[in-house]
Every structure is written in structure tokens, then in C-alpha cells.
Image (cartoon, rainbow, N blue to C red; front, side, top):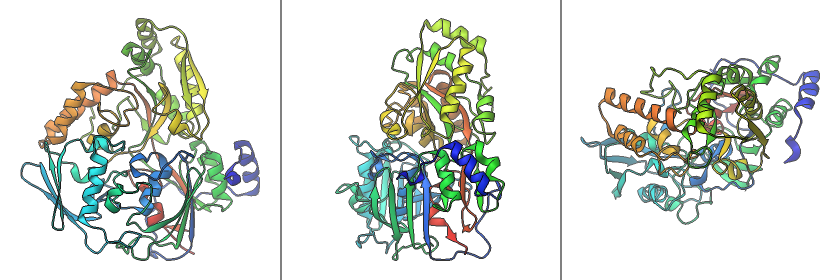
Length: 516
């Protein structure tokens, strides 16, 4: 799809001269007072797609697949866009027994898949079984490890746990857990769900096309007639496509372009604080990063405020090398932030005994400004005598060939519903996406204990202990939590903030309509 290729220089010059660059407000907007209107063809341009992408929901990563899944599929449970609390979806309601180890989910009746077959309790059960299978490669596997049994009791799905889990309903809102016919076991790449739009075409790394599901069980969504989602990995090209009318919504607006975008009312930029973060990853089991003194040196060597100011334009908050911020319930609020300290970095670097360059791999696809952030980090670490060599990688294939493969790389993560799901996704030893290769039995035990702890104060203390272990021993170098910066045409209604992720939590196609 070379249609969207354009250089930053060309965009900054031609679009400013032509008056194409537009925005109205960074204030979050709710649905317009006139209410939803039906009709039209919606085009969305997103980052993070690759030719190696698969429609198998267990493999989903990045904004493209995340949003595609939420466009054609439904989960048992969704999360509230403002509070993050669980809300009904394919499960109408649920309750736990007194011990918190058995949960009963009452499954909605009269729902049909896009192939015309009726959705049943068995489909829901098979979905959980597929992703919970120890042999599964699902990104949700780490979230489901405490499941002991999955039962179908009439119209109910019953989940038995090895230990209490107060967060189980929110676990089922994870974007990998789309309910599919027979759980996706027959054909995991079919792209058949119960969502507001039916998938009609898919070309990995290029485009997905949808038409409205006329049999949708939920009348309060799916207002446009059809949807196209394009892979546009180049940050500037997405904005150019939006301002020229080729698309109506784009994600991951470059913070450095926000001021320019404020000059015209044709486009709205929506700033949504949330749980996502930009980071650098070091594999704790791969030399030389298997030395914690070296990892500690790298953490002291990064100037977080400079990256927040110069790369994110201030659109975010400072991080401290653990993946939880104030958007999470029971987040620690009394951990003293680690400062930028070249002297301390130099001390730990000498203590590590390492000599020579460290190759940091990055790409524009990693996050907006990732290359600039890596270059800044390189100059900051040099003040401590640490030689970081920045290697820019191709955008296409970055998420398959670099992230979770190479030992030192740039990355970003969207939010997760709970602290437990955040840690279970990529920090506990058994996590399929343990992208820092962090294997710590003491940490695993604390997270497991916190998941089943019903006393709020005790649970908060356990999560604080978990955060300190990741911060002090892990391979995560987390300078900033990013605000989500999405942009959309001013005639789009219904685009709301969602703390779970960008593009309205991935539900943009479901929620929006054309106002004229």
C-alpha cells in the first residue's frame, strides 16, 4: 500500500502550505448530542502491522490486530472505558462462590456468529480451553494459568480455579480471548466472531475490510455500513492520509506534530491518558544483559524527563522501570523515583565489568519517536561512559524479527485490565511474551498470592513488592507512560477516551458515526 508513503519533510512542507493540517481540541470529547447516525464507509489507518500478521487471536500484538479483533469479535466481558471495571458482553452477568475459586458466567442467548451459526456455551468454553492449553502459544496463556476446570452447565460457563482470583471477569476482557466457533480450534485464522462487523477481506500488513453485521446482538454500536483498516506504519504518512481525506481516523500521532495539527478545525486530536508505555527491553538471560549491575547502570543512564519533553512533547508521565502507573487499581504511590544519575550509572557499569558497545535495535514502528528516543538515550548513556550503538531496523517485520527476539530493543505496551494481567502477560516466568526473559520465582509467588488476596491493603502491599522486584532486578527500562494521541476527522462522532488503549480502546469502528 504505497498510497500512504510520504516523507516527514514533504508532509511538513506541502500540507502546511496547502492548509491541510487540522485539529480542534486536545480535550477528550464524548459522543455528540445529536446521537448516532447510520451509514457511510469508515477508513482507519493504524500502525503496527506486518506481512507476517495472523488472524489467529492468540497471536495478536500491535494496534492493527488489536483493533481488527475488536471490530469483528466479542469477549465474554469488556472493560468500562473510564473506570476500567468489568461490564457484560457475551456474558450477561457472573458471580463467584464464597472462596473466589469458582465463577459462574451466564452466557447471552440468541447471539449468532457471522457464519450464521448460533453461539453456545460450548463455544465460550472451547475459547477458554484453547487459550489456556499449556501447549498454546496464545498471548493470554499467562493470564489463564490458574484455571483448573472449565464446565458447561446448561446456559452457564463455570470456571474452577486452583486459587482465588478476584479479577477473573476482567481477565476475560483480554483482547486475545475473542469467542469464536468451537473456540477457534477448527480454524483459528477464520476471523469469524459475533462483533458489529463481518470480516470480508484481509491482507496481512496491508488491509482488512468489513461490512456491518446486520444480525448484531448489540444495537448500540456498529453505526457505519462498512469499514476498512489500513496498515500505515509510517507516523507522518498516517497524518498525511488523514489530512488529505484518505482515512478518517489514525493512531499514534507524533507528539511533535500536535502543535502543527492545532492550526485547522478539520481534525480533532484526542489525548487519552492511560496505561500504555514506551520502553527499552534487555533480556535478563542473555549476555551481557544477564548481569544486573549492567541493567542497573542502563536504568540510571536514561534521562526520563528529557525523553518525555523531547520525544513525547510532554504528552505522558514519567516511568520508573515497572509497568504499572496510577491508572491501575492498587498501584504503589510511595516508591521513590530513580533519578537520571550518570555517576551512579558509571559506578554500576564499572562494577558489571562490561566493555564495548551495546547494540540497541529500534524502528519507527516500535513507538512514535522511537528512533529519536534511542538516539537521545545513546547520548545520555555516553555521559556515564556507556557506548550504546543504535541500529535502525525496518518497520515491516519489527514485531516478528526484533521484538521478543533480539536482546536489546525498543518496544511499547498497551494497557491491561489489572495489575495481575499486566504482570501475567509478560513478566511471570511462564508468560508466552516474557520479552525481558525475566525468570524470578519469588516474583512469581508474590503475583500469584496477590491475585487471590481478598484483603485490599494486603493486596496493595504485595503488588508494591512485585513492582520493586521488577524495578530493581528486571530488564525493563521504562522511561515514560505515554498518553494515547489519536486523530480523527471532525465529522466523526462518538470517539471517546478509553483508558485501556488507543483508538478508543480498539473500539473506534464500533463506536463512531459520521455526523454529516
